[in-house]
Amino acid sequence: MKEKLSKLKNQVKSNLAKAKSLDEVEQVRTKYIGRKGVINEIIKTIPSLPPEQRSTIGKLANELKQEISRWIGETRKKIVAEESVPDAKETFDLSLPGKHKPYGHEHPITQTINEIKEIFSKLGFDVEYGPEVELEYYNFDALNIPADHPSREDFDTFYLLARSAGGDNQLLLRSQTSTVQIRVMKEKKPPIRMIAPGKVFRPDTVDARHASMFHQIEGLMVDEGVSFSDLKYVLTLFAKSYFGQNIKMRFRPSFFPFTEPSAEVDISCSICKGKGCSVCAYSGWVEVLGAGMVDPNVFEAVDYDTEKYTGFAFGLGVERLAMLRYGVDDIRLFLENDMRFLSQF
Image (tube, rainbow, N blue to C red; front, side, top):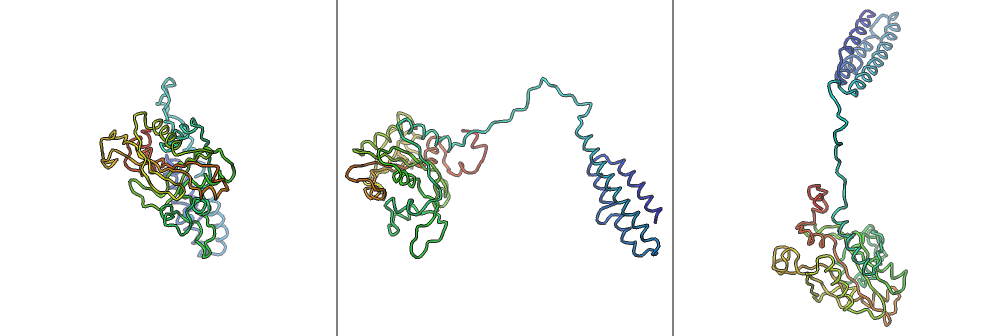
Protein backbone atom coordinates (compact mmCIF):
# COMPACT_ATOMS: atom_id res chain seq x y z
CA MET A 1 0.00 0.00 0.00
CA LYS A 2 2.94 2.32 0.73
CA GLU A 3 4.33 1.69 -2.76
CA LYS A 4 0.91 2.41 -4.24
CA LEU A 5 0.72 5.75 -2.44
CA SER A 6 4.25 6.60 -3.59
CA LYS A 7 3.34 5.85 -7.22
CA LEU A 8 0.20 7.99 -6.90
CA LYS A 9 2.33 10.84 -5.61
CA ASN A 10 4.57 10.69 -8.69
CA GLN A 11 1.55 10.41 -11.02
CA VAL A 12 -0.08 13.51 -9.54
CA LYS A 13 3.14 15.53 -9.90
CA SER A 14 3.49 14.40 -13.50
CA ASN A 15 -0.14 15.19 -14.37
CA LEU A 16 0.01 18.66 -12.77
CA ALA A 17 3.26 19.43 -14.62
CA LYS A 18 1.48 18.68 -17.93
CA ALA A 19 -1.65 20.73 -17.06
CA LYS A 20 -1.94 23.86 -19.21
CA SER A 21 -5.35 25.13 -18.14
CA LEU A 22 -7.54 25.41 -15.06
CA ASP A 23 -9.89 22.80 -16.53
CA GLU A 24 -7.04 20.27 -16.72
CA VAL A 25 -6.05 21.05 -13.12
CA GLU A 26 -9.64 20.49 -12.05
CA GLN A 27 -9.63 17.10 -13.78
CA VAL A 28 -6.54 16.10 -11.76
CA ARG A 29 -8.20 17.25 -8.54
CA THR A 30 -11.36 15.29 -9.27
CA LYS A 31 -9.42 12.14 -10.22
CA TYR A 32 -7.23 12.00 -7.14
CA ILE A 33 -8.86 13.88 -4.24
CA GLY A 34 -12.44 14.30 -5.39
CA ARG A 35 -15.31 12.76 -3.44
CA LYS A 36 -14.95 9.58 -5.53
CA GLY A 37 -11.22 10.08 -6.16
CA VAL A 38 -8.40 7.55 -5.85
CA ILE A 39 -7.23 8.74 -2.42
CA ASN A 40 -10.71 8.57 -0.87
CA GLU A 41 -11.15 5.06 -2.29
CA ILE A 42 -7.90 4.01 -0.61
CA ILE A 43 -9.03 5.54 2.70
CA LYS A 44 -12.22 3.48 2.49
CA THR A 45 -10.17 0.27 2.34
CA ILE A 46 -8.14 1.04 5.48
CA PRO A 47 -10.57 -0.79 7.85
CA SER A 48 -9.89 -4.00 5.90
CA LEU A 49 -6.09 -3.79 6.41
CA PRO A 50 -4.24 -5.60 9.24
CA PRO A 51 -4.55 -3.60 12.47
CA GLU A 52 -0.82 -2.82 12.61
CA GLN A 53 -0.95 -1.12 9.15
CA ARG A 54 -4.11 0.94 9.52
CA SER A 55 -2.61 3.83 11.46
CA THR A 56 0.43 4.17 9.21
CA ILE A 57 -1.45 3.90 5.92
CA GLY A 58 -4.18 6.27 7.14
CA LYS A 59 -1.60 8.88 8.10
CA LEU A 60 0.25 8.56 4.78
CA ALA A 61 -2.98 8.78 2.78
CA ASN A 62 -4.16 11.95 4.57
CA GLU A 63 -0.74 13.59 4.25
CA LEU A 64 -0.70 12.81 0.51
CA LYS A 65 -4.20 14.21 0.14
CA GLN A 66 -3.12 17.48 1.78
CA GLU A 67 0.01 17.65 -0.39
CA ILE A 68 -1.98 17.10 -3.57
CA SER A 69 -4.41 19.85 -2.50
CA ARG A 70 -1.47 22.23 -1.96
CA TRP A 71 0.13 21.34 -5.32
CA ILE A 72 -3.16 21.93 -7.09
CA GLY A 73 -3.51 25.37 -5.49
CA GLU A 74 0.03 26.30 -6.53
CA THR A 75 -0.55 25.10 -10.08
CA ARG A 76 -3.75 27.11 -10.35
CA LYS A 77 -1.98 30.29 -9.25
CA LYS A 78 0.80 29.66 -11.77
CA ILE A 79 -1.62 29.19 -14.66
CA VAL A 80 -3.64 32.30 -13.73
CA ALA A 81 -0.45 34.35 -13.53
CA GLU A 82 0.71 33.09 -16.93
CA GLU A 83 -2.68 33.88 -18.52
CA SER A 84 -2.57 37.46 -17.20
CA VAL A 85 0.78 38.13 -18.91
CA PRO A 86 0.25 39.31 -22.50
CA ASP A 87 1.65 37.18 -25.27
CA ALA A 88 5.04 38.43 -26.40
CA LYS A 89 3.80 38.13 -29.98
CA GLU A 90 1.04 40.64 -29.30
CA THR A 91 1.86 44.33 -29.44
CA PHE A 92 -0.03 47.21 -27.88
CA ASP A 93 -0.12 50.49 -29.77
CA LEU A 94 -0.43 53.33 -27.25
CA SER A 95 -1.32 55.75 -30.03
CA LEU A 96 -4.61 53.97 -30.78
CA PRO A 97 -7.78 55.76 -29.55
CA GLY A 98 -9.55 54.25 -26.57
CA LYS A 99 -12.77 52.30 -26.79
CA HIS A 100 -15.79 54.60 -26.59
CA LYS A 101 -18.36 53.71 -23.96
CA PRO A 102 -21.66 55.46 -24.64
CA TYR A 103 -23.04 57.63 -21.86
CA GLY A 104 -26.59 57.21 -20.65
CA HIS A 105 -29.14 60.00 -20.83
CA GLU A 106 -32.47 60.94 -19.31
CA HIS A 107 -35.48 58.77 -20.03
CA PRO A 108 -37.95 60.44 -22.46
CA ILE A 109 -40.54 60.65 -19.66
CA THR A 110 -38.02 62.44 -17.43
CA GLN A 111 -37.17 64.76 -20.31
CA THR A 112 -40.86 65.55 -20.78
CA ILE A 113 -41.41 66.22 -17.06
CA ASN A 114 -38.40 68.54 -16.91
CA GLU A 115 -39.55 70.47 -19.96
CA ILE A 116 -43.06 70.92 -18.53
CA LYS A 117 -41.61 72.03 -15.19
CA GLU A 118 -39.46 74.60 -16.96
CA ILE A 119 -42.43 76.02 -18.88
CA PHE A 120 -44.56 76.43 -15.76
CA SER A 121 -41.63 77.77 -13.74
CA LYS A 122 -41.39 80.60 -16.24
CA LEU A 123 -45.09 81.27 -15.60
CA GLY A 124 -44.40 81.62 -11.89
CA PHE A 125 -45.54 78.17 -10.73
CA ASP A 126 -43.72 76.40 -7.90
CA VAL A 127 -42.95 72.67 -8.13
CA GLU A 128 -44.30 70.64 -5.20
CA TYR A 129 -43.96 66.94 -4.37
CA GLY A 130 -45.87 64.55 -2.13
CA PRO A 131 -45.89 60.89 -1.06
CA GLU A 132 -46.88 58.14 -3.48
CA VAL A 133 -48.36 56.12 -0.60
CA GLU A 134 -51.29 58.24 0.52
CA LEU A 135 -54.23 58.33 2.88
CA GLU A 136 -57.72 57.84 1.54
CA TYR A 137 -58.60 61.30 2.84
CA TYR A 138 -56.15 63.13 0.56
CA ASN A 139 -56.82 60.94 -2.47
CA PHE A 140 -60.61 61.05 -2.29
CA ASP A 141 -62.45 62.71 0.58
CA ALA A 142 -60.74 66.12 0.51
CA LEU A 143 -61.16 66.20 -3.27
CA ASN A 144 -64.94 66.01 -3.00
CA ILE A 145 -65.05 62.29 -3.82
CA PRO A 146 -66.88 60.64 -0.90
CA ALA A 147 -66.99 56.86 -0.54
CA ASP A 148 -70.51 56.59 -1.99
CA HIS A 149 -69.82 58.83 -5.01
CA PRO A 150 -69.92 56.95 -8.36
CA SER A 151 -66.96 58.95 -9.71
CA ARG A 152 -64.67 57.23 -7.20
CA GLU A 153 -64.56 54.24 -9.55
CA ASP A 154 -62.86 56.43 -12.18
CA PHE A 155 -60.07 57.21 -9.73
CA ASP A 156 -59.88 53.85 -7.99
CA THR A 157 -56.46 52.56 -7.04
CA PHE A 158 -54.50 49.91 -5.12
CA TYR A 159 -55.19 49.69 -1.39
CA LEU A 160 -52.34 48.65 0.88
CA LEU A 161 -54.72 47.61 3.67
CA ALA A 162 -58.15 46.02 3.36
CA ARG A 163 -60.99 48.43 3.96
CA SER A 164 -62.41 47.97 7.43
CA ALA A 165 -66.10 47.70 8.16
CA GLY A 166 -66.06 51.15 9.74
CA GLY A 167 -64.55 52.79 6.64
CA ASP A 168 -61.39 53.94 8.40
CA ASN A 169 -58.86 56.12 6.59
CA GLN A 170 -56.80 53.56 4.65
CA LEU A 171 -53.39 53.64 3.03
CA LEU A 172 -53.31 53.41 -0.75
CA LEU A 173 -51.20 54.20 -3.79
CA ARG A 174 -52.31 57.62 -4.98
CA SER A 175 -54.31 57.65 -8.20
CA GLN A 176 -53.69 61.38 -8.87
CA THR A 177 -51.19 64.01 -7.80
CA SER A 178 -54.10 66.23 -6.74
CA THR A 179 -53.26 64.86 -3.30
CA VAL A 180 -50.26 67.21 -3.28
CA GLN A 181 -52.58 70.17 -3.92
CA ILE A 182 -54.55 69.34 -0.77
CA ARG A 183 -51.38 69.01 1.31
CA VAL A 184 -50.05 72.34 0.06
CA MET A 185 -53.34 74.15 0.67
CA LYS A 186 -53.47 72.79 4.22
CA GLU A 187 -49.99 74.19 4.88
CA LYS A 188 -50.16 77.50 3.00
CA LYS A 189 -52.59 80.32 2.49
CA PRO A 190 -53.25 81.93 -0.91
CA PRO A 191 -51.87 83.08 -3.22
CA ILE A 192 -50.80 79.65 -4.46
CA ARG A 193 -49.43 78.81 -7.87
CA MET A 194 -48.02 75.28 -8.14
CA ILE A 195 -47.63 72.11 -10.17
CA ALA A 196 -47.22 68.61 -8.73
CA PRO A 197 -45.42 66.00 -10.90
CA GLY A 198 -45.09 62.34 -9.98
CA LYS A 199 -46.15 58.72 -10.40
CA VAL A 200 -49.77 57.68 -10.00
CA PHE A 201 -51.37 54.24 -9.92
CA ARG A 202 -54.67 52.88 -11.22
CA PRO A 203 -55.85 49.29 -11.80
CA ASP A 204 -56.17 49.82 -15.56
CA THR A 205 -55.74 46.99 -18.03
CA VAL A 206 -52.37 47.52 -19.70
CA ASP A 207 -52.65 48.15 -23.43
CA ALA A 208 -51.26 50.54 -26.04
CA ARG A 209 -52.80 53.58 -24.33
CA HIS A 210 -53.09 52.56 -20.66
CA ALA A 211 -50.76 51.45 -17.86
CA SER A 212 -51.29 50.65 -14.19
CA MET A 213 -48.50 53.13 -13.33
CA PHE A 214 -47.99 56.38 -15.19
CA HIS A 215 -46.85 59.95 -14.58
CA GLN A 216 -49.10 62.92 -14.02
CA ILE A 217 -48.69 66.63 -13.47
CA GLU A 218 -51.43 68.48 -11.61
CA GLY A 219 -51.55 72.26 -11.51
CA LEU A 220 -53.28 74.67 -9.12
CA MET A 221 -53.70 78.41 -8.86
CA VAL A 222 -55.61 80.02 -5.97
CA ASP A 223 -56.03 83.73 -5.27
CA GLU A 224 -58.61 86.44 -5.17
CA GLY A 225 -60.36 87.00 -8.48
CA VAL A 226 -58.99 83.97 -10.36
CA SER A 227 -61.30 83.18 -13.28
CA PHE A 228 -61.79 80.64 -16.06
CA SER A 229 -60.18 83.06 -18.49
CA ASP A 230 -56.99 82.86 -16.40
CA LEU A 231 -57.11 79.09 -16.72
CA LYS A 232 -57.53 79.28 -20.48
CA TYR A 233 -54.71 81.82 -20.79
CA VAL A 234 -52.24 79.71 -18.78
CA LEU A 235 -53.05 76.48 -20.62
CA THR A 236 -52.83 78.21 -24.00
CA LEU A 237 -49.37 79.52 -23.13
CA PHE A 238 -48.33 76.05 -22.04
CA ALA A 239 -49.67 74.29 -25.15
CA LYS A 240 -48.00 76.75 -27.53
CA SER A 241 -44.71 76.51 -25.61
CA TYR A 242 -44.72 72.71 -25.66
CA PHE A 243 -46.30 71.86 -29.03
CA GLY A 244 -45.51 74.98 -31.03
CA GLN A 245 -47.12 78.33 -31.79
CA ASN A 246 -49.36 76.92 -34.53
CA ILE A 247 -51.21 74.54 -32.20
CA LYS A 248 -54.94 75.08 -31.75
CA MET A 249 -56.95 74.40 -28.59
CA ARG A 250 -60.55 73.80 -27.67
CA PHE A 251 -62.38 73.36 -24.36
CA ARG A 252 -65.25 70.85 -24.06
CA PRO A 253 -67.64 70.75 -21.07
CA SER A 254 -66.92 67.79 -18.79
CA PHE A 255 -67.25 66.65 -15.18
CA PHE A 256 -64.70 66.25 -12.41
CA PRO A 257 -65.79 66.00 -8.78
CA PHE A 258 -63.14 68.51 -7.61
CA THR A 259 -63.78 71.24 -10.21
CA GLU A 260 -66.92 73.12 -11.27
CA PRO A 261 -67.25 74.05 -14.08
CA SER A 262 -64.97 71.43 -15.65
CA ALA A 263 -63.58 70.98 -19.13
CA GLU A 264 -61.64 68.55 -21.28
CA VAL A 265 -58.92 70.30 -23.24
CA ASP A 266 -58.09 69.19 -26.76
CA ILE A 267 -55.32 70.29 -29.11
CA SER A 268 -55.10 69.98 -32.86
CA CYS A 269 -53.32 66.73 -33.64
CA SER A 270 -49.59 67.36 -33.90
CA ILE A 271 -49.15 64.22 -36.01
CA CYS A 272 -51.48 65.07 -38.89
CA LYS A 273 -51.70 68.84 -38.22
CA GLY A 274 -55.46 68.57 -37.74
CA LYS A 275 -56.17 66.77 -41.00
CA GLY A 276 -57.15 63.47 -39.36
CA CYS A 277 -55.20 60.27 -38.64
CA SER A 278 -55.36 57.09 -36.52
CA VAL A 279 -53.84 58.88 -33.52
CA CYS A 280 -56.67 61.42 -33.35
CA ALA A 281 -59.32 58.95 -34.56
CA TYR A 282 -59.54 61.04 -37.75
CA SER A 283 -61.11 63.92 -35.86
CA GLY A 284 -58.13 66.26 -36.05
CA TRP A 285 -58.23 66.73 -32.24
CA VAL A 286 -56.54 64.95 -29.34
CA GLU A 287 -57.51 65.21 -25.67
CA VAL A 288 -54.49 66.22 -23.58
CA LEU A 289 -55.75 67.26 -20.14
CA GLY A 290 -58.66 67.97 -17.84
CA ALA A 291 -59.22 71.27 -16.05
CA GLY A 292 -61.73 73.47 -14.29
CA MET A 293 -62.44 75.89 -11.47
CA VAL A 294 -61.80 74.46 -8.02
CA ASP A 295 -65.04 73.26 -6.40
CA PRO A 296 -65.96 75.23 -3.23
CA ASN A 297 -66.24 71.92 -1.35
CA VAL A 298 -62.49 71.41 -1.86
CA PHE A 299 -61.78 74.87 -0.42
CA GLU A 300 -63.97 74.08 2.57
CA ALA A 301 -61.96 70.88 3.20
CA VAL A 302 -58.79 72.98 3.55
CA ASP A 303 -60.48 75.84 5.46
CA TYR A 304 -60.27 78.44 2.67
CA ASP A 305 -62.81 81.27 2.54
CA THR A 306 -64.98 80.36 -0.47
CA GLU A 307 -66.33 83.91 -0.64
CA LYS A 308 -62.84 85.37 -0.88
CA TYR A 309 -60.82 82.92 -2.94
CA THR A 310 -61.28 81.22 -6.28
CA GLY A 311 -58.90 79.03 -8.21
CA PHE A 312 -58.38 76.69 -11.10
CA ALA A 313 -56.82 73.24 -11.36
CA PHE A 314 -55.68 71.06 -14.23
CA GLY A 315 -54.13 67.65 -14.71
CA LEU A 316 -52.22 66.13 -17.60
CA GLY A 317 -50.71 62.72 -18.32
CA VAL A 318 -47.01 62.95 -19.07
CA GLU A 319 -46.94 59.80 -21.21
CA ARG A 320 -49.83 61.13 -23.31
CA LEU A 321 -47.95 64.34 -24.07
CA ALA A 322 -44.73 62.47 -24.85
CA MET A 323 -46.58 60.12 -27.21
CA LEU A 324 -48.07 63.08 -29.09
CA ARG A 325 -44.80 64.98 -29.15
CA TYR A 326 -42.72 62.10 -30.51
CA GLY A 327 -45.33 60.19 -32.49
CA VAL A 328 -45.24 57.11 -30.22
CA ASP A 329 -48.29 54.87 -30.61
CA ASP A 330 -47.78 52.47 -27.65
CA ILE A 331 -47.29 53.60 -24.03
CA ARG A 332 -45.64 50.28 -23.17
CA LEU A 333 -42.54 51.29 -25.13
CA PHE A 334 -41.70 53.75 -22.35
CA LEU A 335 -41.66 50.95 -19.76
CA GLU A 336 -39.84 48.06 -21.48
CA ASN A 337 -36.25 49.41 -21.19
CA ASP A 338 -35.58 48.62 -24.84
CA MET A 339 -32.40 50.55 -25.66
CA ARG A 340 -33.26 50.55 -29.37
CA PHE A 341 -36.28 52.70 -28.50
CA LEU A 342 -34.85 54.80 -25.68
CA SER A 343 -31.65 55.71 -27.53
CA GLN A 344 -33.71 57.70 -30.03
CA PHE A 345 -34.45 60.44 -27.50
